[in-house]
Image (cartoon, rainbow, N blue to C red; front, side, top):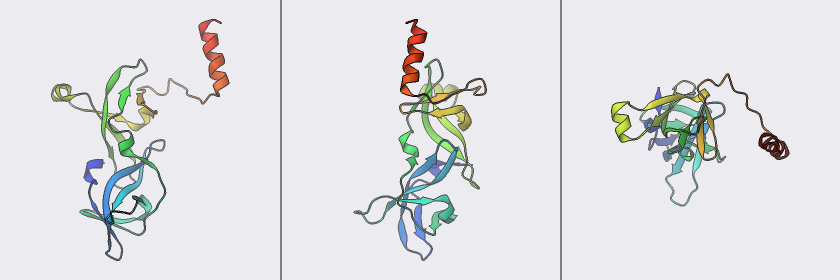
Length: 169
């Protein structure tokens, strides 16, 4: 099992031995629960960030050796680090600190959540399984028994009608 911190600032080198840069962030597909690649900060100061997808990685240990870089954009891990994890009653369970994932297929196993320094000392940090979480714009929703709930996308007109019905109008 790996954490994102195991890859941060790792040097990235091409197959021909040219240093490309270092790893700045992880690229995440939250819906599939996978790390799909890495965001690379290039050596050249004026160049934009690059991406390397996991299928282009040849080897990694102290350095990462890759076949090619990609310029596409993806969701980065740091876009939801420090996001609050809440339950369905809007209770704040903690803040996202890191993720754990496997080394063979880069599937995310859990999200490490911190509840604060004092609480971490007594109770420790918690790890929530990725299939129990829903990523939102401002928070991450934790649903422990996700089999009981059914989510569906609704058009704005349907939501308005549903709200009026629940208010008794």
